[in-house]
Image (cartoon, helix red, strand yellow):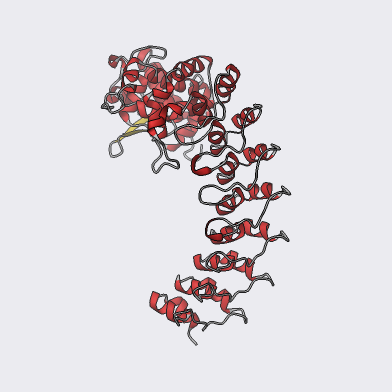
Length: 460
């Protein structure tokens, strides 16, 4: 508990009242508290009511089992409230969430129960009817979106034997199931392009790898009959999904298959290593680097290598892992001719900049296609810490102009970064009056842009 002395006793007493109602009311109240405290996102009132109306294992959805929100709130004895503006249900106080999670004995295997509920819903006749006509009105199945998107997350946390059987049942016609489309269409904007004309290519193995359900992946691989390198409607193989989402256990299983291709390109030409590096999944990166046939510098469709993309995102641990390989090229250019150091400087990742500058084979003043140095990129955005690091190097020219004659000082002045301007003006080898190819000086640029703090620093 974080505040409110005695709140634990209050919750104990209230939960005793919930249980004391007996019968259906008690079961409904406890089930509602389980769902609200363990759901992957806030539940809308109709979603919760329909979830509580599911009879696990039933082939049909019985609308008579769905409680009203009024009944549900009454059964929870004041521990649950309805946010009318958002139409969501929530616990009465955040300390109740802490209390419930600290007392797991209140619920019997919450996540496996929730997975079984979601899968029962998806396997129902009513939902299977929708799968044949995905343009149908979905208002009659309010729990469909949550079930489609989150069943696997609950199953990954705790996969019961029965949930596994229900998942296998769902997988039998999964490629044509409406939940497949809902899952792949869930994130907006989506980080990948889905070709829904080829939705059938998103197989059960793709789905289990997407969610990271180790037992399911192991079973599907053991049974055989599936191409583990098959690309789906996003252009991705199962290994790409596992690496993308950081599911180390699944990555290990898939890499253990004799015919696995660890360099299989996925969406936007990204390899499993690229995906794991981009999102900073260190363990997955370690596993992939342990493969003799993994290529380190395969760029994606934007010409960014795994090292470049992880430098952009500031994943220091992954940067160290990649640089630990002798066959890595720390100077390989990516988009706009930018090196990993250039990218790290531009995005302000001081730790990555320091790691890269420790290498003798990294040029701290290497130009991109517009003749801008890493210092230029950091100065333009206003990353004072990176600017200080680069100015501390003897092999960095702080007054080097780009193809437009604009120096790092010019870039900092144009964007109003007074702190960076001050750092650059502290150098004797920086000319504060150097004009660009159009004759504009840093002062005239700052004046046009209306940066009074920078103007004051640049005025004679």
